[in-house]
Structures are given as structure tokens and as C-alpha cells.
Amino acid sequence: MASVPALVPAEHMADHVLVLPRPGASAPDLLLGLAAAWFDDVAWLRPPADDAPTRGGGGARFHGARVRGRPTPALLRLGDEHRAAGPFLLDDGTAAPLGVVGPASAWALGRVDGGLDQRAGRPVVHDDRDGLVRAFAAGLPAGEELRVVTWAVAAARRTGGVLLADGRQALRPDPAASVDLSVWPARPVPAAELLEVVRSVVATSDLGMLPGGVPGHRVVARTPYDGDLVVDQAPAGGLPRALAHEPWPDGAPATMLRLAWLPQDPYELEVEVPSGVHGIARSRARALLARIAALLQARAGGAVLDDAGFALRAADLSARRESPTPGTRAWV
Image 1 (cartoon, helix red, strand yellow):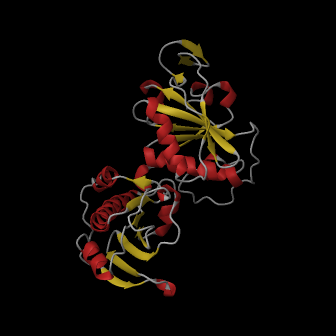
Image 2 (spheres, helix red, strand yellow):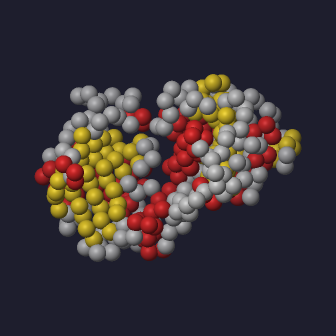
Image 3 (cartoon, helix red, strand yellow):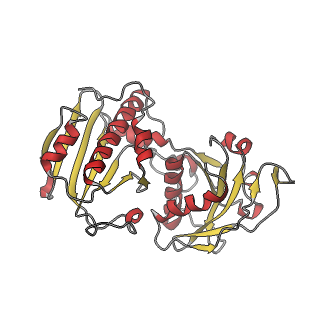
């Protein structure tokens, strides 16, 4: 496994290293957009330079990697205590051993004051979709560091990247594990219309009320092999950070729709490497929920977010509908 000095300068070797598969001038914009979906008041403490630091390729050697000069890295604030330094650009040969396709950018995630975060005790649970228990077996991050690490794993899942926890332990979250969606429509979707949309994808769908007396309605599509698909429409409340600055024609959405998959064995949602059967069902559910979200957005407008709160474009939904598993129809 590549160590931190092969990806970032020595002064960042104690940091977490987030590797995102986008190089060059677009790397800072990608990181800024991902950070703004989770953190308030995201801002550059040091703006990006035109010529980013480079790892790999030609030039002088530095701790096993080649460097074409040492421009000062940009610094992006992440919350009140942390920052991301970079981007340190990686060529294909450096990114490939990390499991990242194509050229990439590395960002060093650490404290603004240069200190080390205090860790909590050793993990006492083992069910962990993101692999944090494995990566931090000696002591879990806590407080703001845990938030930064959780965001970095979500960002890696969203982009097909990787996080090196403490610069050593690789966390490669599977992008296909992101199944659930939320739709923030420009107008409320009447119950009959919602049922019509979901039934156009899964014919066995039924309409009901939300549990607990919450205003709204729920459509459930039950299948014998793949679990249930559940679509809830409820009052929106506040906007998520990713949509806080979006223009809405009639003000903020009054309702939101949550699209969720309930597998036959919910325990498999909490493990880093689920079974093959779970993966097949998950692939079909992911494609079906993406189809439902696209249909709802086409009718009611608005925006679609993934389960980590990152905004999805039409191309992202289309890619989800192109399931790698043969057959994207629900078993009914």
C-alpha cells in the first residue's frame, strides 16, 4: 500500500489522505462542492494556485515520488477545526495501485492548528459499512475529526475515490452501496400521482399513510426476493446544505420524498463486504430507485440527492439505472 510520503509532502504524513479521481484545474471545484454539502461556511483559507503540486511523473525525486516543483498547496476549511491541503496531482501510475481509475488528486486532511486530534477508545462494535472500525482499531476518531472522516468516506464513495486513514489504512467505499435517494420537488406530488409513478416501475406498489401520524403518504413496493422499496412524502422542513443556495421558483420545497430500499436481511447494510446475493438485490434496487427518482423529477422538477446528501445530476441517475447486474426489473 502506498504511504503518505508517496502522495503528499512529508509535513502532511500524519494526515488522512483523500484521493479523488479528478486531476488538474477542476480538482479544487470538485472538493469545494463536496465539502459544501456537509460543512457550513466552507471557504479557501489559501486559494488554489494555477499550478498545483504534483506527485508522480517527471522531475526531482521526493520520498519515492517525482515532483515537478513545489507550489504552495491550497487550504480549504472543513468545519471549525480542520482543513484540506492540496491538490497534489497523481498520474495514472500512482493512482492505479490505490484502486482509483485515471489521474487523480490527493488532499491532506488535518487540523488547522497543525495538532493531532484526540481519539476515543477502541471500537466495541464490528458492524461497519464504511470500514472505520477496521481502519481505526486502536482508537476511533471523535467529534469534529469523526465528522471529517465520515465526510471523506462519503466523498470517496460518491466519486469512486479512496481514503487513506492516517495515511495508511485504505478505505475504498463501494459506490454501488449508495442506494437510497431523496427528491426535493418544486411542487408537492399528490398521493395518486406518486402511486402512479411508482407503479409504472414496480406494478405491485401500494399506497398508505406514514407511520406515527406524520402528515404525508407512503408507497411500498414489495418483492419476494429483493426486499421492499419505500417512497415516503412528508413535510420538507429545512433544506439540506447541498441545496441551500439553489433557486426555487416558489420558495423552498414544501415537501420532500425519501426513496429507500429495505433488503430482506437489513444486517447486510451494516457490513463492509456484504454477500453476493445482497449485492445482486442491491444492484436491482439501486436501478429501480433511480428510475423512480428520475420520473418524479421529470414531473415535479426540483433536485435529487444521494444518501450522503450530495446532489445528483441527470447523468448520475442514468448511470445508476444502468445496473451492472443482469436484469433491472424487480422480482414480483
